Length: 404
Ligand code: ATP
Ligand code: MG
Image (cartoon, rainbow, N blue to C red):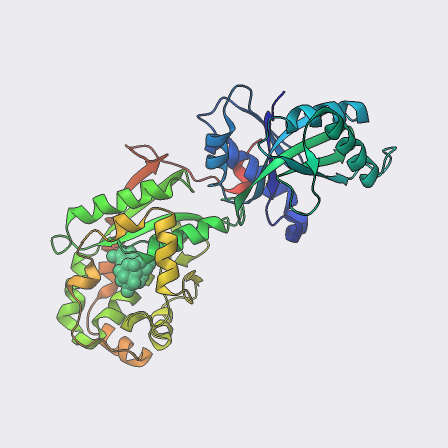
């Protein structure tokens, strides 16, 4: 006898009330997608997802599940019938497969009609283990904890738990247009949103020939890494050169970054609305650079009433770097590259740009038609499961579209 199934405990479900059904439907869908390559059987119910392992080794399946958002915890379990003799027999056989010399039994009983209470079950199971093995009881520092969960009609036995990613199932909380540069911050911001159940649709502003094609390759590598958390991702590449040249021809140098950002947001808003995204997201962090002071953000934000999410706005650089190493985007992000921001970087960017000033400089050239042209010229790159896929539209599922 061996532990032959995995039990997936739902994440922040308790706080979600009426969204429970949607949470579960979305998570079951995502677990199916994540475990596509494994010959396992997946069944979801209102309390947990049960994964029958068959001959499949548990470790790689657990590792993959630890990358799926919305999972609190994963337990390696064995499911038995409920007569106490059956439970005793199974617990004795299973505990013998675990390393260690001491144990304790912990029981949770949700079936209140069961003839024994939790304490009675623990004692009965512990007695059987003591009778049939050399293990000894240690209630304070046991090597093995045998958890017995008694539910109506079934009993779950487990000795090992693994932490999940937490958060919400991806797709449950809508979709945003993510402004993705080649730096460290924006991929971490994208990951943070995915963990909260938000799908990301990426947008990059490219200024060839000032920026190199190598940036696009770098972005593809970043997105292949992010495919671990969101299986299907699109990168929309905006031709930004003309608009950027117009900015530098008409706007005094200290205001160039501010105006450039305002143009990016105007374009992002159009793209977001066209793609049914509910907001724009960036990797900005307050105070990090001149364009990221609060005063700057006020002036940049003024061009839209659309929500702009800044998941990293109060994060320290060190913790951002730590996350980027954990999600394996760091090594890709630090590859040298020329961003449209670095190329045209003014010597003295304005740290407190004013809205009226920005508007005055923008009035000096016809940016609206350049914005239209940029949006018209967007090209798409699709990445799915860590591979670039050609010519195929990937439709990111909205919760309502998921059929289980
Ligand atoms: P990052 O590490 O994400 O590049 P950063 O600290 O270098 O951030 P900036 O270059 O000022 O900061 O960019 C701030 C944010 O603006 C980025 O996180 C990203 O969301 C967006 N952004 C900047 N440049 C581009 C670009 N070329 N295309 C798309 N988004 C961009
Ligand atoms: Mg950058």
